[in-house]
Image (cartoon, rainbow, N blue to C red):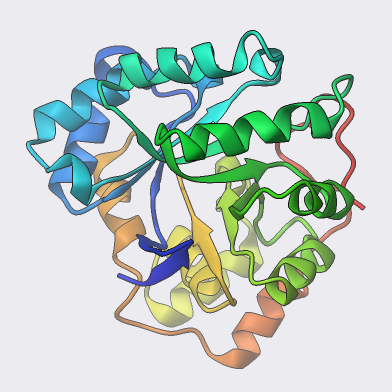
Length: 272
């Protein structure tokens, strides 16, 4: 496993995304993921599965301190009267006293960033979260967040071979801010692309393994692929015993497209 430092914590670069995993299936899949070695679990208030994530962690018998647990605050909870209570409710559902990382899920379109970043800082200072970060923030919003005094450790954004995040990634690298990639497999939509299948055949790997290995060879990137298939969960972890040639890394880089998102920008978020 590759580890990326977020703050002072070495975090597994491959984690488990849990979007759309709910109910008994979520508990079973997350418990299985922990059993086969996943130690980085990502959820959010929006996903409505924090309760299942918490139960899966308990069922797994993996020590809480060995799991890097991430959740996110939804924009409707960024108001002063709802921010801290919503975090406390998330912790109750997750059956834990703290999360390792708390993210702002999306920048709020109507509430000034300066109004809620101090509350994010307060959550860290109070011990409810060990580290803090953001998700779906553009460069301007990242600058404002840092200027407001928030020591954020990551920005979680959609990142895969069909979306051009080069400018954002470059800026983040310059500022020692790792990028966490959600939808790294393009929600499965790019796995049947002929050019990707051809590369996978060369390395005798699956298309998903090629994409995730490409990501691991880029600087300071974590990825949180989601799968409800147990075989694919194992495949997504099994990417550290081979490398892609630099020529093939550059080839995959060349597939990037402008404004080719699998997840629609919400709350008026812009990326430049």
